[in-house]
Image (cartoon, rainbow, N blue to C red; front, side, top):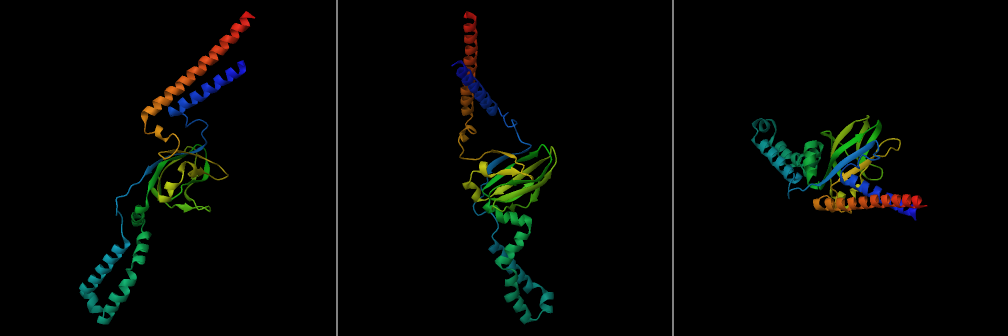
Length: 260
């Protein structure tokens, strides 16, 4: 009975103490792997109708070129009437159709980002750190459309399993990267805490710490400040109860030994 009393008291002390360390924000360094990412998830609301419509752009460019074709004196002098008519009726519609314009816009990174912005639903932003040298570091993020690493646009690749991934390359000891990713609607139906993974070559696995994700058990602790105090008070009570139980067990054992 003494053994079980002592064991229960120690378990209460350790669990309550660990819970208080977590609430105080000091647990992220406990048993932390060499490779770690600290990311914040946020919703990315877009105003209704925001973006560029390729049809409107194609129509505007076609009409603008057609008008310039009519107004340009040098072109009218150089080209015959029938040639002008063929350029206006055949060449311009083929060059300035929606498919061609959309393809050209996607080839320009800045315009491509504006075209895709209507599909952005969430963003993930944070830091990836490595305490040791690591090769071929990659971060898998489902539904990623656009990515930036240290302010530079990086292409999002697709793995053999169909997941979107951000390749960070080799990292030296102590190196860190600031990453930002924009995700589409498919990211809203998955648990990012389980699907966002960090790893490197030779089977090295990193740890991903995620803030702001919705739907997890205890998520209300983040917005409700009073709940943190409540949980902290409960853990403190459990810690004190465990300590008192342990002290009482020790004193009882000593008293019994002294009377014997």
